[in-house]
Amino acid sequence: MQTTPTNLEETVIGQVLRKFISGDVSLFELISEDIDFRIDHFRDEVDVSWQKAKSREGMIEVIARLGQEVFPKGTKALGLESVDLGNGWHLTRFEQEFFYGVRQCDVSSLTFIVSHEADGFLDFFRETVTNVTDI
Image 1: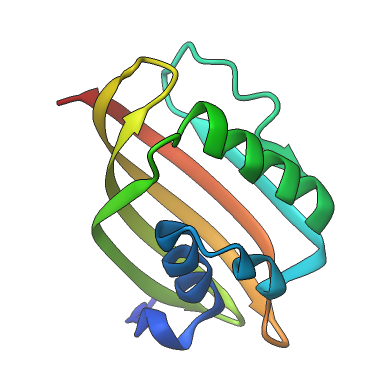
Image 2 (image 1 turned 135 degrees about the vertical axis):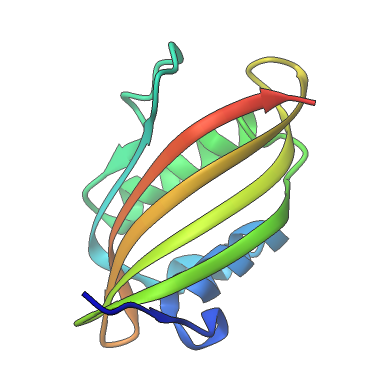
């Protein structure tokens, strides 16, 4: 299988993540009404059962709660790159630093996101948080 590096600015996932990083709520204008959204954590004890949604409105609620509990001071991107998997699918690597409200300390984190976009909207989002490391 061949993968192609992507110019993130030309993808919906890239635009959504840039808006998320900058705290721009207009990111929801790029989300499909029937988004399939979920965040998973690898080998982490934190309860993430609420970090999923099947609609734009549901995703707005999840992102609002993330803003209060996980990212109360926002986030800083350390690395953001994506590859085009074909047919609207992308795999994105997102490395970030933020003040983690759950632990009340600064952390770094590496996540991988599989996403799908069609007709200018993001309609599938699966994020796997591989680690959350105190710094």
